[in-house]
Length: 485
Image (cartoon, rainbow, N blue to C red; front, side, top):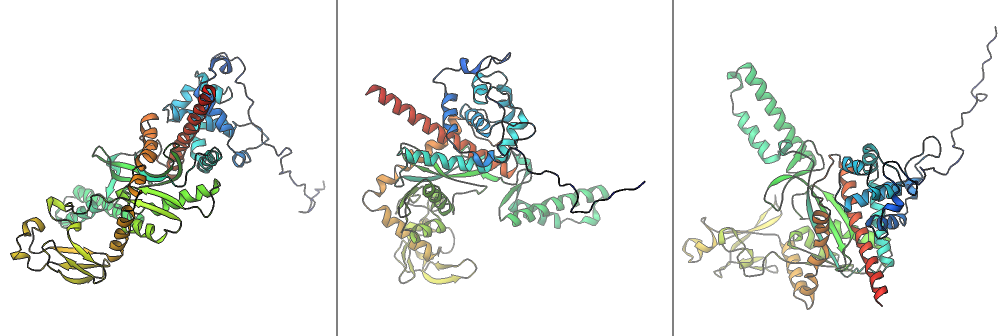
């Protein structure tokens, strides 16, 4: 027998292009009668929230996501319908895929949004995990839609943050300070005098804390959560120290209260976040149609009063006008234990000198090369009658970063200008309702995932739901005013 062999150029090329490039999705069966859920189109009232959600989600452009679906084989669920289901679930307080999948079996509102289909838990989880880019793009589209409706005001921006519980246990938290202390304690133990089993326990403890120190130094953080890489230990308003995430939000308009910028990290404080938040808000507003030469006006609380934040406000005054209030007014004691604070010392940047509350010129400056600031030491503190109010040590020490002090002085001058305090007071009514909507109206206080990409996608989804709820409310008010007129 003879065997015929073909060369590489003669081999049959397998078809790799699909015959129909248009993606196919499961058909809409919401108007059909179902044995379990009935007919959703007839069951859901005309003014139901889910109908408004469906109409607004339909206006969003999801073509990039749709292009990733195949036209061959088993048809998938339309991304707009899955997105509408997640948005509606967020607005009514369902944040876990298991809860949403269970509700979709019999809830007519969910079945109407899904086109008569009941999504499984896996479909909902995968969609939320993989569509971070879609949620970000949809959030920006809501800002663009608000701009077309005249709801955006670049002169009324506010920045603040909210802490969300992480999906992690406090037993999985490791702090840099505590691990270093434990390593020092373990190093002082005589390992040779221990029993074999005790040696193994000792070695395990050393490995645990050594790894914790390595992770903290690698991430540049003071704490890590082993089971949730995007989380860290932070102080919550209740006073408890728990694993959490920090979501920094830039909101626009006292009436609209729309989210125009989101940053997510595991920082313990707000310090240093102002520049990134303002630049992100400006990027989104420019995409929404704001003129390039427009000057933003941003208000932030005292948590954004670090050197990096105030220097940014001073150096970028050409395109952004920032208002940041100090924690306390000048002249009030700000030191620990009721002692004199920084505001009680008179700083002269021109001469680089400091006068203490008693009017004496302090000795210095003594430059601290390691930290980059000047240090001043009190003169005659041992005989000063104000010493009990100034220091409990031998002499009072004051450190001064002159770049920081110039930025603080510049911000004080800006806050003292006419109208600055009135505009700053609008901050609470602009950004705080966003957090109230998130935590109280939606009941969203804890993230349901540990994966970093899913955590960010989940927070973006909730803020997208907030923006859509604001557009729905505005549409209803316009309709009411139209009917009244």
